[in-house]
Length: 250
Image (cartoon, rainbow, N blue to C red; front, side):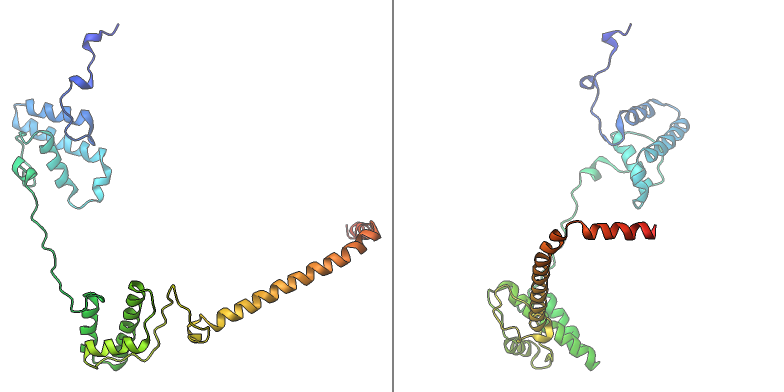
């Protein structure tokens, strides 16, 4: 019969340092600390490392995963394990050390409503020597400027305003030759304003076709209703003919 006094509860155990490895790995590391022979302790340390890697196969996809295993081994032993490691042995100070503050890039755009990235694109467009690529840059920049204006305002800006602002930014070196179509949520333009963009004539033609399909469907229903009584009056004549044809074929 099991003695209740010999049972071990979690409340009586020491703190589990790394829960992802479990209690058994921590007990193995604690056993390593009790081994007096250095060579035997080193061999057992390598065995524990292999077992830790086997229990966490996802670490194999991480760069230098064995380095992480050795760091975890020293962390579980509270940095008191005296073994040789193929990697720099971490200390308690390096664990608690805070990383350096990341240098935040300080960029002050000249045109806040367009952002800093548009200035980089404009500089690249001005340095482009190929006229076709330079024109493509100008058209893309104009489209982005109009899209930005549409996102931040409740009205749609005219293309002349975009061109005047682009000329002011580039000192007249860039001019776009397309009409950048940007559909605004409060756009009340006529259908023929941007017919080539696929929003006007095509949509009207779609409505016409859609209406024709509705009308056709209505006529079909009307014809079905008109002919429905004839079928009912004939009774089962059509069904008997169908049955005769079915028997002839099979």
